[in-house]
Length: 399
Image (tube, rainbow, N blue to C red; front, side):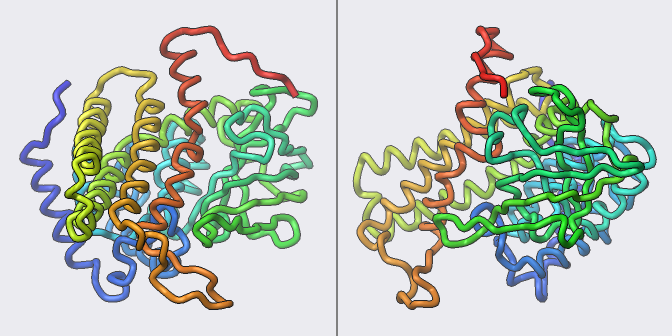
């Protein structure tokens, strides 16, 4: 299948570009280009308001299979167009991407009509934000080893356990939680996919996790008998593993292309810095810059190939391996381009603010996590080995 943009796509591009130019003004200009990985704490209030602005014009949920929830419906190529124009406009990083890109397609695929009617409209309008309750201290990359339990009590479940590395948990209204609903079950058996309201004082506690950057993009979430209604179990009790794996397959896609536009902007900044500092005169450094540029182009063509209909079960894992290590190398180049000045922050040290980081320093430090979050490199290689190449499965201990 050939992937390209036709006349309708270009008309859609003009519409998207005009809308962004008209609406990305006023208070929203302060959040332009802000709020991405490593800076998700920035301008949270403005970005939440921006979600409502997007929702009011139907720009949330373009990729959903049908409309009727306040969302426009766009073709695959038009979704790519919107993602590209959004990134080029340096619009604020999406506050509602977990609800739009993960929860909503999962409900469309596995949820019942009542669940779709209840949860899709407020996602489409930007009114309800979501977080993802998967990873645990003893079950990060090995998700099947999770221990969080949910015990049925009449028409509710009582959820008890701990989740970790939960993005936006301190802002979210709801959390989709993978929990063990069958006592004594092991691994991927006996799990259920629960929709849990976060506003439960005394039953849910959110604790920020401070990172190398000095900020806290992730959280620990403690559930102590938190309530989840029985009708909010997606896919039925005991079918959580199937639903969870279906959701993980949705984490890659159109958003990858928008991510690459952001990467291109970061690379251009590194090149500009290297020219200014003289680092670009070093032939070895120049060679690394050229390699970064070429690899970014390859990632784009690979993403387009995958979206264009190429059947490749290992494509999501390959994409994650490529961009994770690429972004780490870019962070290293960002500091090398600065030379010795890369060790100095943009502001003076004070007791109240021990250190301040500029964009290049945040890029270097936060990109250390790129090969871990969203599925570590080790796990991605195992997936390719076992599910694509057909190699023997890795021996895992039961717990």
